[in-house]
Image (cartoon, rainbow over all chains, first blue to last red; front, side, top):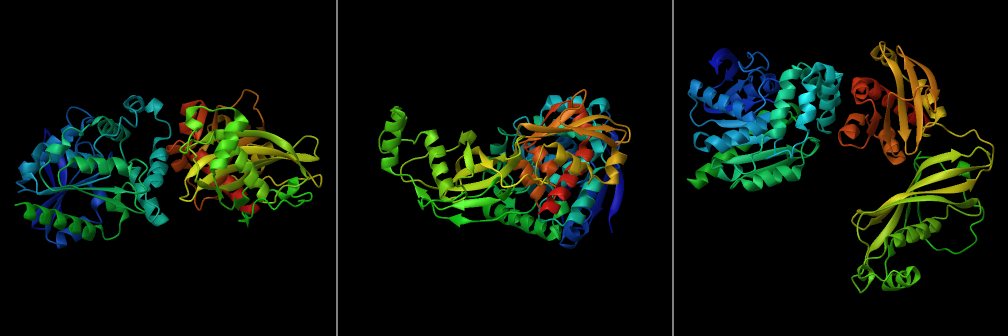
Amino acid sequence: MIEASYIEIGGALAFVEQVGEGTPVLCLHTAGQSGVQWRHVSAGLAARGYRVIVPDLPGHGRSEPAPGGPVTDLGTYAAWCLELIDRLGLERPYVAGCSIGGKITLDLACRASDRLAGVVAMAADAWTGGRPSERGLRRELSDVAAASRTDRTHLGTLAVVGRSVPRDKAELIATMHRREDPAISTSDLIGWTTHDLRDALPGVTCPAHLVVGADDLWLDPDAVRWAAGRIPGARCTVLEGIGHYPMEEIDGFDAVLDGWLQELAAVEKAAS
Amino acid sequence: MTTEQVLRPGTGRDPGPGRYFEDFAVGQRFTSTYRTVTAEDLADFTRLSGDDHPLHAGPDGILQGPFGVAIAMGLLQGLGLHGSAVLGLVDTHWSYRRPMRVGDEVRLELAIVRCRRTRRGDRGIVTRHMALVDRDGVVVQDGTTSAMVAASGPGPDPVGLAFGTVPWGEALVGRLGPRFAESLASWDGAVGLRAGEHEVQLRIYRGKVIEVSGRAATGATFSLEADEPTWLELVTAPENEFTRFAMTGRFTTRGNGYEYLRLTAALHQIVDAARALAGEEA
């Protein structure tokens, strides 16, 4: 059974789901969304021998807003995750994240490799090259400049779901993504477009696997390969027919992620 | 709607009248055989143009850009489409994407992207997207060329793929669903739909399209723009990919950017209507 709790982190209550026992895996959601994106994964993953921890980042889902207002620095989220790891007493967890969650995952590997068993970073590169533009995003923080926001989120999500995903499933994903708070999502995207990990990646010492969907219009697979190339020993996988949200798009994703985590464990074992 | 034909170039016989204006339809596709670029081509073309810049000299010389247009026309002639019904070439817009060298093999991939009868009515302009493609499927050079072609009758002509024209706009409006009126119930403005150099504007007031014309009285609030091959791809794709096209810059807008964003769902519905219209023509 999934256990829900509210834990005070950084001066605000964080909503955290936990299920299972075993090696801890911290699962991070995408910009503006919440842990609900992992709803089809967490129980199955737990059944495979993991303690699965799915938080809602500050201001998202059922977590309270960050006391300082919407977060525009993904490093702030990474520090928040480390605090969560401390509070839960997680011993060398894996971290798996997607989109901003993927980049937060990479950031965690950069700042705290020694505390992690390994990372799976999906739909994230080292740096976006400043796209989308921070100026345009800051403009969108004013409602008056953000016309038809929910329609754009809905259709924009549909456009980046992979072509192999049945349309009714894609429609469900896009409909649920409409639930975002635009002030939070846009701030997340400012964090996404300004976060530069290019120089830090060579310092990652934990096993890492970067994953990108071939149909993901937000990312260039070559940029993800390049990022993986900066991390000693890192793997890179391009998923055909998949877009920006592998954990929501792929049926039986718990088995896929379990496979990747076992590979990371094998890498670490071989190294030690 | 689309046909695939492979014909041999250079048959040399009298082609007769060939195809008339009405025998061409947007979406038709034709593919030539491969042609090898020879050392003789390089020498001949350098002599003809008089341009002996070092780039074009020696065994590794790059064939000048217009060489591509020239052989594309030869490969086109080899398709056997054109005879005496062709009255002349009207324009060429061309891009050089990869260098062409001796030994390269290219073929012509041609798609009809626009057929527009002239005011006189006895002839029309047929615009062809032409791509020179190598053995790996890489486009070496491409662009459009337009030819004036004699008509065999007075028309009328199909409108389903006549992007950017008033008849196309009118037919499209007839296929807008009820959600279009709902989503624009509070809107007042005009939307331009532009294909290449041709634009139709839909004047919309409170969800109703009250006029379809080449230019609304006070102009378009914004215009949505792409070239004809892009429109063709959009309306014939298996699903409505408008957002993907917009996100990857294949459609651009001019005019009021805020109102463009505001009409996100309505534009999707306009593309749905254009796709329904194209589907009926197929």
